[in-house]
Image (cartoon, rainbow, N blue to C red; front, top):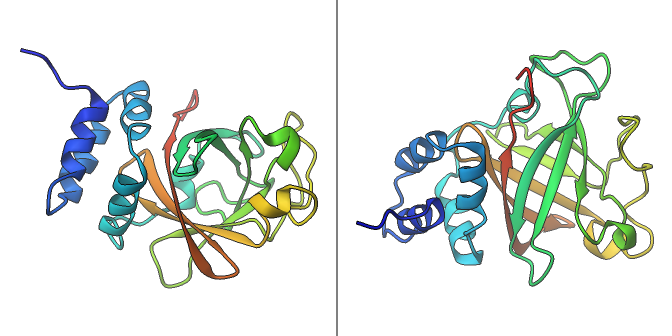
Length: 207
């Protein structure tokens, strides 16, 4: 008997007429990090859109889940992603907690995008904050961090050069799927642009 891959299993669950959010969360929680990345990177536009809609109001996204409290200030946490763009679909969002923030309840996180086009588009820096009145987190490219880990690239405006067309005036909204997995939708000037992405947090050493 041939065992289905994590990607095939997740695709199958997202093809059901009624998506079982709890079953998907339990399935993803049962996998290793590598398997979660494999599963989520199998998701195309249709599956990501359905998943984003399905988890609306499901589980709250807390900043401490994106960067665990055990991680030092300005230490990066990698989230491995796949988006629904026509090309360059694999990327990472790298987050850190600002210096001096409450490790268990920070007001904001800093971060940037790591991907193959970064030399052209810039690093795509952002500030992540909870959405008032919603169990979600906004990743706001209109606001730049005031500091960064030493190994990160220089902070650069998202409204200059080619970066303007990728990150300019953008806000991504994150919803939680499982303990390690979130899914986001992108908007420009407050209007959804029909683009989604899924992220898998890697557990850093000591988390």
